[in-house]
Amino acid sequence: MKGDRCYQQKCGMVRRPYAPGKKGKRRTRSVSEYGTQLREKQRLKHFYNLREQQFKNYVRSILTKKGKAEDLSLRLVKVLEGRLDSTVFRMGFAPSRIAARQLVSHNNFLVNGKPVDIPSYQVKKNDTIAVAPRKAKNKYFVALSPNLKKHKTPTWLALDTDKMEGKVIGELTLEEVMPAGDIGVVFEFYAR
Image (cartoon, rainbow, N blue to C red; front, side):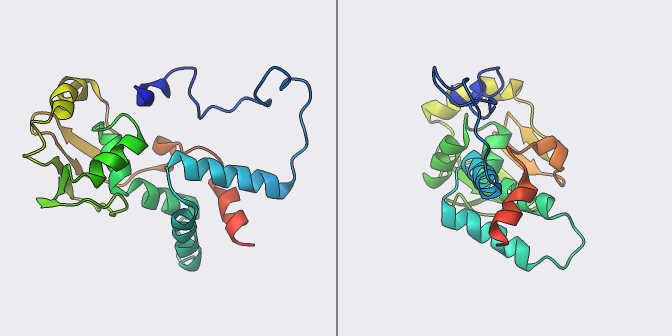
């Protein structure tokens, strides 16, 4: 599975200090400030499997609500992790964020008893996410059931493997999520 690979040494999100290929270790180029900002923005955008406009809207909305004392990086991560597809991935219902997005799009989940097929739906505290009863007999979910028992969910989520449902029980922390890249640089990129 693609999702299991990121828990091993050969994770695609781990960056090496040199370019890929046979000649990549020869020399390193100095990258401009814009180049580093762009690279960090692209890394975070691809980590959450978002399109440019969608990601830009998330960042710009947080930059416009800058008045509160809350940390901007934490606020962005809360919005990105609060998406239904990210929550489904964190609960272990999907091996990757791409698979989670497809499962949500195909109407496989209920949020508080109502079917939701929008991957960008923002999940709130005390929301219950469950596999739709008509989809629970699907081969994918039947095969997934034993693997869910071994899955370790983050502290802000609770998972009931017997009912195939989870609940958002708290607030996430930046240390627990560990997103790819430096989020502060992303805000500098969009603040230009």
